[in-house]
Image (cartoon, rainbow, N blue to C red; front, side, top):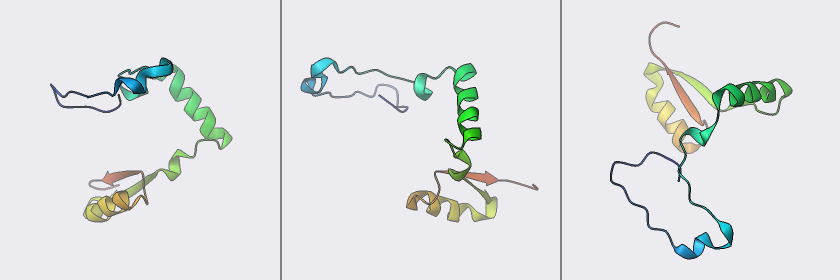
Amino acid sequence: MIGGAPAGAQAVIDMNTLLNGRIVRGIIQGDAVPQLFIPTLIEMYRKGDFPFDRLVRFYDFNEINQAVEDTRKGETVKAVMRIGAV
């Protein structure tokens, strides 16, 4: 189960999907240990294996509508808004 659901939300599960050893498990932020995970991501980036800079696009606040449109179209994964002087 990934994502934040509102309090009291319920999930219906077809029990047949749990056959063959499958498990339903809830996680928060990938259950990563930041002290291990972040250095791993940095090393991957340095090797060229994790180009996170291609996932992020910066927009000035007056470009907020463009940021939303680009996100909806899949042209950016993470739109970052700049508010105020840079």
